[in-house]
Amino acid sequence: GSFVFLRFFGPMLMTPNAFQLINVPITEEVSRSFLLVSKIVQSVSNGIPISRKEPEYAPFDDLIPAHAEKLKEFYASISVKNTKEIVF
Image (tube, rainbow, N blue to C red; front, side, top):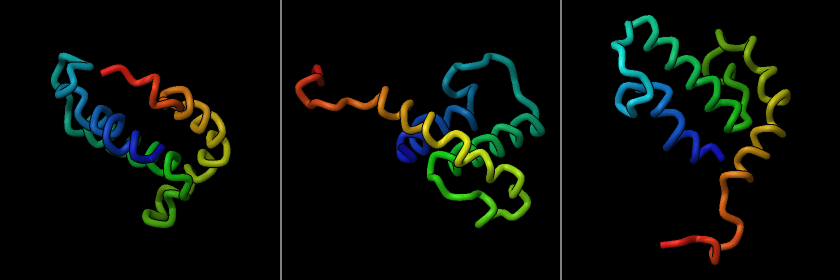
């Protein structure tokens, strides 16, 4: 699950213009906000409290147990369970 976030969703959160998700310039402040959100979601995805690396994010540690099951369900829904389902 964390691989999917790290390689796909994280980059889209941090650089939405590059993925044509928005077509307006973003300020440095907004860019920083996207980075912070990305770090928090990556931490939830990893299942590791973000405060281990960055103590100032301790208030967000509760997000991990609160959303772990939903995240597992999401990753299961986007995963291919049978390689016969893959179409080339």
